Amino acid sequence: MTPTDFQAQTGCSDVIRTRLEIYAAQLTKWQKAINLVAPNTLPDLWRRHFLDSAQILPLAEDAGPGHWLDLGSGAGFPGLIVAAMGRAGVTLIESDSRKAVFLRETARAMNIEVSVRAERIEAVPAADYCPAAVISARALAPLADLLAWAAPFAGPQTLLLFPKGRQAEDELTLAGKSWTMETLDSLPSQTDPAARILRIRGLKAR
Image (cartoon, helix red, strand yellow):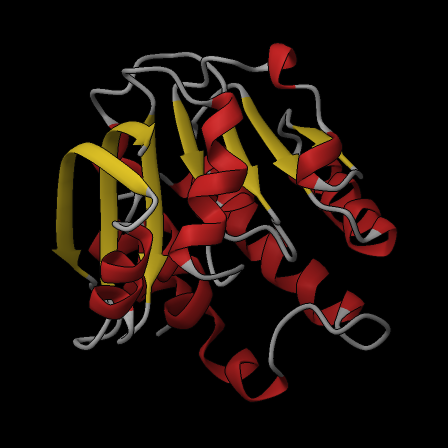
């Protein structure tokens, strides 16, 4: 996928496309020093990482304008992508200090505002963000762990968006032993026919 293909599929503006081209250049440069993404995914960066992240933004259209927390942001997926595409109020939580520097520098290069917290998720005071409007995480941990990390920041209307791989159903079964969810949508991914995007509201511990 090329930047032109990405723009055609997402309908993003020229301004957003330019931001993401800056992002791609930054990631390629920093990848030489920090393992930000699997090296074999770099040639397909715009589909494997950019589109895979961007596809969750329309799923949050009804979430309201509050905090968007991205847990374990790593190279910025999906949080920095949704911020680059215009979502305000995004906070990236990334405990690796080198990756946190990458996130700050890349946001600065794109001329967008995000908050980056170089802390473990468990160390971030829940009162700073609860209730968040949206909580996301990609390629971070099994669903049961994600729900445990997200719960302190979540209120009744908080939307949880978790792209998951082909083990999504197994992870849901395991997580269901400890958590209930008022609504759960398992949606198809645009980038992998075997993957799902979990859209959850009304998270409660059993």
